[in-house]
Amino acid sequence: MLNKMTVFVIALLMAALPVVADRVQIDETRKTTSNGEVSVELLAGTITVIGWDRNEVHVTGSYDDEFEEFEIDVEKGEVSIEVDIDDGDSRHRNIQRSADLTVKVPRGSEISIEAISADITIEDVTGEVDVEVISGDIECRGGMEEISIECVSGDIDIETTAALRGADIEAVSGNIEFRGALGDGARVSVESVNGSVVLRLPSNTSAKFEISTFNGSIKNDFGPQAEKSSKYLPASELNFSIGGGSARVSVEAFNGTVRLIEE
Image (cartoon, rainbow, N blue to C red; front, side):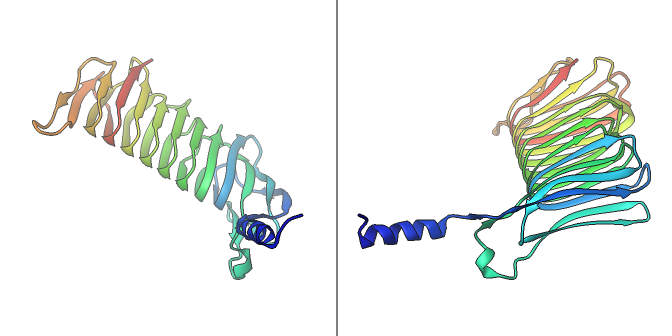
């Protein structure tokens, strides 16, 4: 038989545990244009965006009951998807609130995603991609030509099937990897505070590179090697051009290795 002290301790532990809410299923479709904007806002969970050949947005998945509200709005070809949180009741603070969304969009859609803590996957879209997330891994696969990604904590993995025209990629803590071709006149900026940066580029790449690290090595398959940029610090830099130098690539890493791989 449990004594009063044991019962009291168990009660305290149970009170401290987060409560898992029931789930509500989502299956919603909205008509849109072939190249409109689709935006998704989410507190926590997962977001998967998949391009397809229909002029409509189809959202499936689930979200936590009672404490979140799913909204999908359409206005002039712009589709807004959001899962709202009701924090008005203090009794709900320990509830684990999240949503798992799969969003099918026209391939040419411009994608905008904002999340606090969510893993994000984007596949088979050709429009501009803009992602801002505090914590979570980000994976992009497809014909994107313009990419903007900001991530505080998480890995970023990008593979393009079309020649990239522009990219702005920033991570505070996490590895960054890009595989794809650079278009004529492309502008690419990559910044990492704590994590490695890997760029996998075709052998016929035409670009001018400006690469610097404070505490980490620079490895280059395309020929020229990095030099130390300070007599007293472990910093190094590498500036060079290949194939005429049409594109511009800037990489800044504070604590991590930068690697250029020829494929």
